[in-house]
Image (cartoon, rainbow, N blue to C red):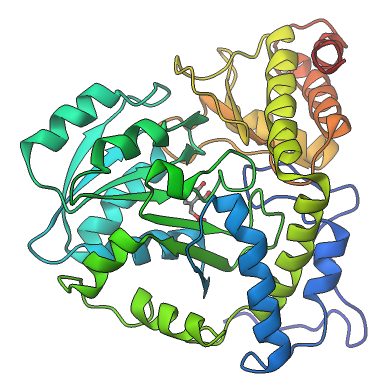
Length: 394
Ligand SMILES: Cc1ncc(COP(=O)(O)O)c(C=O)c1O
């Protein structure tokens, strides 16, 4: 066992080196204001101050989700919220239809298997748009309890057409369960209008907060199912407990108090800029990065047309290895982007375009890529990427 060796008894140890640029598709850069808010004195989570904070957080989130539902808060990561969504609707005899289009959809399948839910899968090839007609045909085969889908596939950079998927089940008993962990706050979400019955998300992506705060919003249609029983056994994830506490202005268990404090600042920032403006900024900056990438020989992964506004996924030009690009960007520039930890390993690089970013963020990403790629054997015209992104934005 390693001995704990205190580095300093008086000073905070920085986790990140100087110049560190967190450019992952989550967790994302957390603005100073959000960090400071999260470092405030912890208050009683059942006292008036935190009750007021929860009320404000719910009011700030509802327009971002496009819902009038209560927002349920959990100390959890996105995967926890995915599991919560499954166990609340999938009884032992109920079948789910999991519509996968990348790694996180496949995680839903893994979760369903782990908790003993019965699930069929309709798999979209990675990088392609979901075939809505094919999903409709599958839904006709059986009375599914729920259709389960990832809104923004962080692994492929493709967005599900939730309006069309919602329309397929709106007038049937089947629920629509959606993970918008990496979409919410950066890509339009109209939960009520589209008929999304259970929406789960998390704090560390476009919501600009540190990781650890999970969110869920549940439609009246889903509540009928949840209250009607047929759920898988669970304690922490039982949405009925969270809802009962929410009615009293509380969470059932000790919440991530500091993260809620940070979220309030992030919500203020989003609403001060204006939600439509925030969403448009995400789209513009993601497209600028794509334009810059194209100018230096980085093409978009996949043939799908519904490109993400929160993550850009580039094909790695042969014979390069994505992991080497990721490593070099970090070593030379302290720019932290993602590769892939799945079947695309080495073949793609992924850059977050969500949260607190601006045009300069994108120019810097491209400048760093322009600096690193030639030395790895990829020829490009120096400055072409930044120039193309600028031309796109101006
Ligand atoms: C779309 C999506 N769903 C779920 C998750 C899992 O979230 P977490 O890592 O917080 O468990 C992620 C994380 O990247 C994600 O991008």
